[in-house]
Image 1 (cartoon, helix red, strand yellow):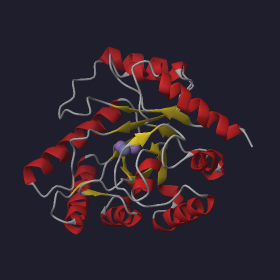
Image 2 (cartoon, protein in one colour):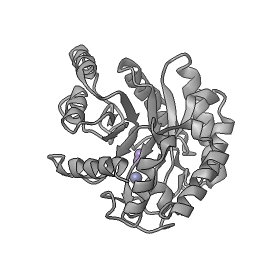
Image 3 (tube, helix red, strand yellow):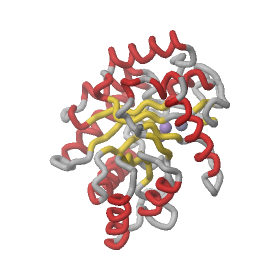
Length: 283
Ligand code: MN
Ligand code: MN
Ligand code: ZN
């Protein structure tokens, strides 16, 4: 089972592996730099070496990277979009050094220009990014969003439109976030709803394009468009959803990553992962 959590890189990127190991993760997600800054510090050779040495000894077989929150490919502001394009290419370069194939990114926010223009901006930006990184073994993964503010990506159709517009289609994948899709209005909280939504996803996107699932409960209700994560089973989504998900054999080989609230000592992660592991084995 590919299960783990988003891990901090405080103290070095290799520390994320150590932290993941300490929680018996088989998959982890990390930022390759500070998520609230445009420029990341250079990854040192020693850091890279430690990273690969630790990986070899570890039970973690999948690492997913997540991009900076500042990047907005949907913006109609030329300067912000150019900055975002360059920052995304830089992050893909960091992934390349670390041999991380998949970089999860938020599609972007149109900031009032409208969804159609926002989606076009994302497509144009991604085409530049993918052309400039042509031949790299690093792909982008569009994360489904809650649709908070002017964020694009809260309908499967948005993701479909972006994928259709991109030239290097084989390098664009999708990440489902359970909190986000529920807040976006997809009711996955009941068995019938779950089936309907996954079928709809399969029809629009295709399960074969799914690379990662963010396993989060939601503090806010169905269709609230509010992006607030909650501990597993403690939110509006409820534990029923997670029980179905953890037993769904279609997702056996898809890394499941929690991004639930946490303090400094990872105690909360330990609890949430234990709950999910139990759901995966119990009838
Ligand atoms: Mn995200
Ligand atoms: Mn997420
Ligand atoms: Zn979120």
